[in-house]
Length: 104
Image 1 (tube, rainbow, N blue to C red):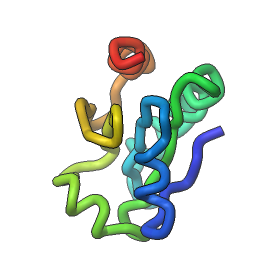
Image 2 (cartoon, one colour):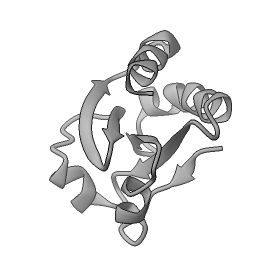
Image 3 (tube, one colour):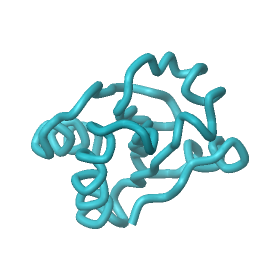
């Protein structure tokens, strides 16, 4: 299951010892809703190896702004607390897994 990112726990999430992937989304975004089941699958499959989190840009606009999120859905991949890769738009599961495997 993916973790919900808020303004309160954002730094804690990034401090995780594993690779972190944050899905930036919004409820009104059709492609975000289409990508959500894929993100949930990956969260389940990579549990214990990577932390998969979701951040609603309407609830946390400051986080999205700090990372330069201009379009959603955007997945940002973090390693050692730093953003190292990203995808923008509706991407296939294989693309996400490939990026994730390269970081593990």
